[in-house]
Length: 154
Image (tube, rainbow, N blue to C red; front, side, top):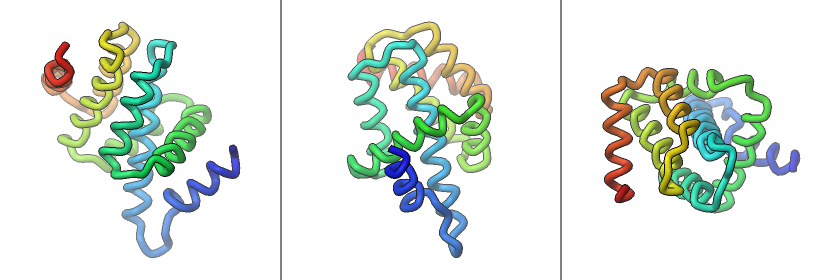
């Protein structure tokens, strides 16, 4: 497992000496993925719908293959285990994403929260907390929630 994570890190995340922007892009992928995984676990029960929603979001947003997605998920889960909170992830998002992209992250969090067709109070709390940490206004937080509910037919 550790070898697979190191291999993924060296191939996809390790900085190239001549291209510092790639580091930022890969770090942002990792930070966003970590938050999505944390959302999946927020209600203490991970089900297939939530896992599929996380995988689908990662693959579509980052244009990754199934193998790359699996590697990114493993690295994100390892980073979550080492993290002391959300700050490590949200600080990267604050530095690297535009406001519109941050709202999109909140929308993705809502998609994971609603993927099992119900919203747990812990899930809602987490989305609210992350929105605050990445400075998404309450109005946009609510609008993202309503867009996702409409999209999912809830």
